[in-house]
Length: 114
Length: 109
Image 1 (cartoon, each protein chain N blue to C red):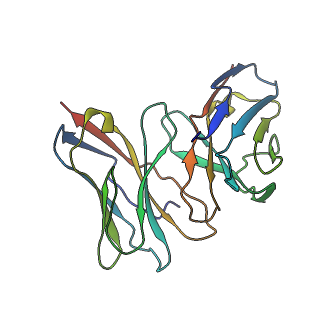
Image 2 (cartoon, rainbow over the protein chains, first blue to last red):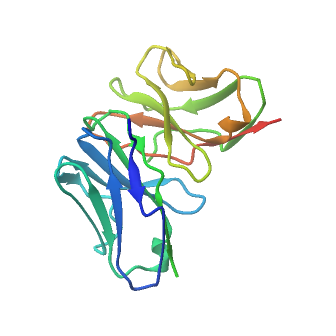
């Protein structure tokens, strides 16, 4: 079956612009996660959805970052007024039920802020 | 706080078994041990997980010590395609997966 997909695969933007990153989870998976990975670094947790609700937003680095999920499926991560330090690979994962369930990752979106 | 300790890097000869250690001395009774790997420029890939018993699947074996304070991921016949960063993660219900720096495994020809 289809895995987690993300779009775009690459995004180059200018400092101060807003960007939207999209994640399509595996069909039927109720939990969805966003992470980011800066060059040469480990994964940093951003936000977690169970259905359309986000019980854990603790990882969002600032109020410029927001995310939503609609219909219990697709999620978008929005970064407003991008800064150069936002440059990273943004990874999305989904799992069937959340909690300890195995997370399956998408290929990521590489964001470059000039 | 990743709650795990892994060596930063390891080498393994192609065709040999790769044994990747992980220390998790503060693990609690209902926390699982998960292993993922990340090949360059790709998203992390699930490998295996376990609670108490040793586990084996088509990719690897997971050996968990009796006191559960450490574990070893075994790739029985490493290939060049197994070169990746390997992450050992301790997960409890309701917690998020916390990825530490992992072990960079280099499989050498």
